[in-house]
Image (cartoon, rainbow, N blue to C red; front, top):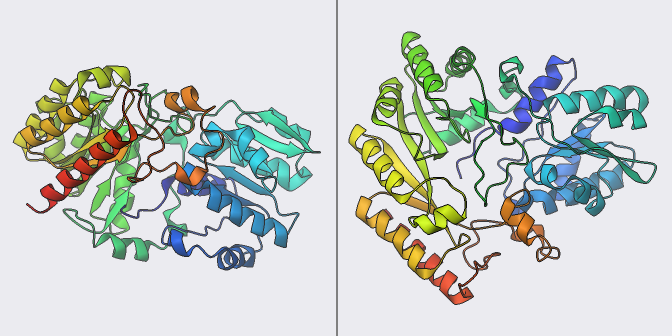
Length: 425
């Protein structure tokens, strides 16, 4: 994983600063998970004498988050603690039940909700008035109250740019010099939120299914800010950057008109049915040079089963166009998807070899908030959250119907061997 400034907390921090709050960030990006020392982190946080502490958590980091929150509460039982992020958005009530030290959870996008929560908290404390806030659940007099329907921000242009000044830009710049990128230092930014598609394995609990995009002008203003910070390359991890073709073309036009002279990478899996030669050429001309393609599987039956809405032929066409223009591309694939078999995984490997293109793979994991989780949650009740990790190649959590454990492991081993084979070329 390439460490980049976590944009979620940076956006929340910017919104809070804009509302007049004094914000500090304890950035754990460079903390080794295996050497996670709760007592040290607790001291770092409490040294700031915070009025309230907010956390952002993923499913596989939630056990460590609980541990740190419990340690903080042991030290200061009156310190209000709020948690947001994809895991919590999918399971707000369960999060509060699992960790009694958490006072409130934020569901969906937190910029507006957190502000509303703080305004009430810092004047009246945790009170029933908070039930008027959408996207907030909280603990009050031994009861869990609140409205768990998520909030999604419609006008993204109205949000301030992420508060990157609260992070060690120097450290991030230095680390990014080691990236396999065209230019350094590398920053990241998002230009849209939400994805209208309904892939079974994907969790949309945090940003929802409505695609909301920033205007090209707003996007380019942030690019100019990044360039002023000294960044020369930008990763754009949007869920769906190319959803609006016209918007992308306009962004590219402005990038060229302003003489930005930066390079761009799309690391989060561009849809193979949202690409054509004219669009990719326009992007290439503006500095886009690298992208991951969200193929998932080379078998149409599996693609249909997971509701991807694409075909293996569309993946091949997208690869051909991107290669012809000169893009550096990597395919995203997932082993052990619903509907998978030894034959379907073979089709995926065959396509990768035939197209002669680098790929990376994960193991299908039913994350909370996904349709797959919804269909399996009763079986998942007692499984520890740290097992929810799509890079767990030796003890996969999910076994597709009709596949044995041994067969799935064999497919994972073959994928690893193919990756190594590619790496040695």
